[in-house]
Length: 186
Image (cartoon, rainbow, N blue to C red):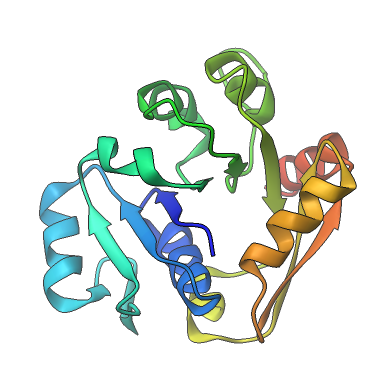
């Protein structure tokens, strides 16, 4: 099973780290707020965003972004307006990048996939979107999402990596459609 890096320790990032751990992966959950990450590491809960939800032992909270260099897949779960800066700070790896935020960059009008392509032009990329709520996902309630990549085969691989009994990603090759539907919904 690939090692997964989750970039963003808000509610959605924490929920996706839990999903990835439930799917059998070793997960690194990166957050920029050292105090918050230390609290998560100590209590095994993200009391700021998902109080009462315990993180599996396979989730390692980190603040050092260079530790993500070992990740074989990275989930980018930072707000749309912070994606460019965070993406530019990531260690350069061959890991595919899955964009798990929704929106457009306000200053340029660019889609998030366009930002990632500009910051990481050689990286394989996908978009995860769907009608989901972080708390319900973290609680293990049934959730279906879509993972879109440039090829159906890539999307299927990423979907299989994250799938679990209650979390079902459906693969698609319609990156533009999935990305715009998520952005316009918000």
